[in-house]
Length: 339
Image 1 (cartoon, rainbow, N blue to C red):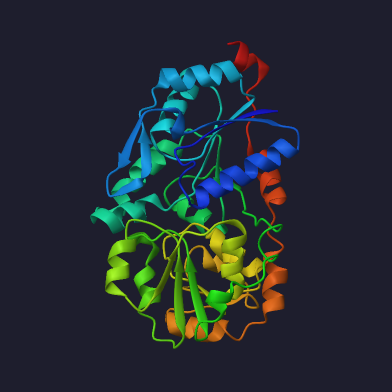
Image 2: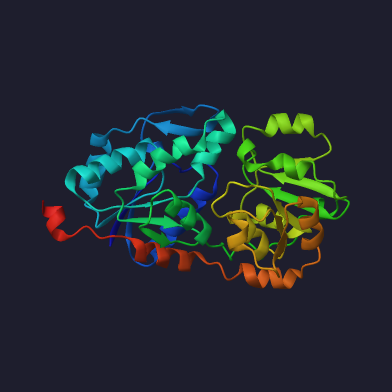
């Protein structure tokens, strides 16, 4: 099948959306499918206000449409709600072509955290964008319920996976392992919507390590000089950081899934989190702990068996995720293509 994936999130961005799309693309191509990715790097772009690491592309309907026409896709998937996908959405609607979308990011909550805007105002746009899709892919049951509450009902489950050839295979980073224990680790974007300060102000004794980059990094480093900010890590280096931690702390209240949680689990590291969307769908009692008091969650998570965490983390595979994605696609009929 020729599958067009259109996205506003792509390299060099480092986030869960990009990792998901790249991993699923690789699995689809292993299955023999041909995948076209239309992404911001193909167009002129400007930095996103308040988040310059993200680029907003000047993607016209004509330019995106020509790429799609040249590829002649048998299915079109729109991964995000930004300008590149808006152009593809217009092109599909003009031709009465079916398409699927995905709700990767709690965009209304992110906008609210950054600007103070009422998230329900942003939900109007989200409902408008996804409304014409033949299927909306959601990572967890609680996200599906959130979408249903805003009138979006054509939902399909699309889970996430772990690169098991990387995570769980690296020895612990000796520099991190050598810190005074227990070692508490955060991995991810360093941004206000990730609620990292809740982790940095937790009172549990031990060493706190932050791996990642983002717009809040400089201010947090200045405000919390006793924290070990290690910057971004990738591949085996990231796996070694997970393996060296005694507990992985996931303070976000706005994630739809949280890939970093299952990467930590596959590395044998238990997870402490709030009982909110994302963790409540991903964590099992054996793999971590959730509590409204993050210190309490950390204390409980530290009692979990690392082997049980690793075994649970290994149940999340990108092959299964790609199969779910493929099953959710809505083919463009030969008649539609001819029209």
